[in-house]
Image 1 (cartoon, helix red, strand yellow):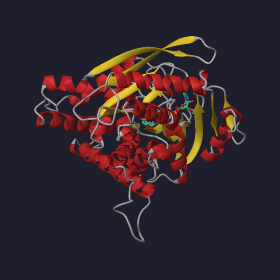
Image 2 (cartoon, protein in one colour):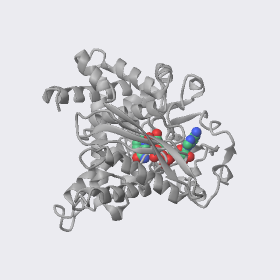
Image 3 (cartoon, protein in one colour):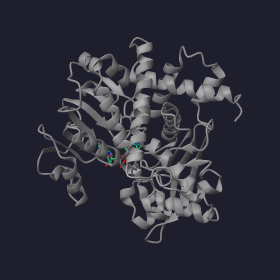
Length: 439
Ligand code: NAD
């Protein structure tokens, strides 16, 4: 089952018994529109290459639409539909007033020079702008797999040029560099959110008791798949809270150390040009999945979708799976693992930290003032980073409690994913009903 089919199944099973009128349910489930774009760029050697890209708009029940832009050689239309859909439910769940959107450019960023990547990004921005599909009030992208604040800054400057220096241009894209209106804490936000969600779960004594685990993160063994933005920051915050990062998996190998790996040292090694498997203080494997299947308390898939599927679900030995990535578990694998008592903290909740802080960045850009500058003065004033992190923590704890309350109401018969989807669907249905369907 591919990512989109998985999403559709999750939706269908969650919407059952919700009393959402059939037609409205169909509207909430389906993607409003998807563009398949093809455009040429000139490579450094003078040759012309045609690039395939997509832009998905899942739901306009709220404006603007929000969702990252990814660079990936496996991106396709179904994937963009699924990712845009997930964004709608994620935003609804954590009370961020956006609809879901997504962008995907079918390239392996490692195969292009920086100037080629810049031309691709700026051309994609132009394509969206010319279709009225980018801007502070229409679609506001952010980073995702394969993109960083560098690409977001290119999008910002291109949008600003094309929109005659629209005074709100900075709010056309989030995850920007701080100097260009970005907000402190955005880079770490998704990983920090993964940590917050896990902390809330592990502090639930009753739930941990059922799993035969001690309460709290301290001493828990963690394996991370994908040591990029989300995976690295999740590892960092979990490590700093006392958990043990016993394994890290990348696309070209995996490493383990039962005594624990220090994420900062592994990152430094990679930044200095080292391969993950050359890292000294560990046992290393050429197979990216060797460590993925090892025993651990918490497994954090933070790379791409469908990595746990019908073929390998039997090999998973983790007690808790924390979905840093979007869609890492297929529908069949989700059913199998849940039945076997594994707790899965779902993507639409667990990796929402990024869009939560992106919302704060968008507000900052529209307000044209730094958080805390006007209303937070005096001796005890908090810095922007503290305000952002506190608000992120508050939002994620509130959503966790909503999910928990829903599960209690159903006497524990719902998984965390089913509860999260139900909450998202109910909130979206209410918005539609309140506005009389027509936006
Ligand atoms: P990233 O590009 O920064 O990092 C991804 C990492 O995964 C890279 O280091 C890559 O080498 C590695 N990887 C690729 N294939 C792999 C494989 N087969 N095995 C192990 N590692 C592999 O991307 P990211 O921003 O960290 O995004 C990761 C996931 O998190 C995606 O699913 C994305 O949609 C999701 N996500 C990201 C954000 C965000 O704010 N960046 C927000 C929400 C969700």
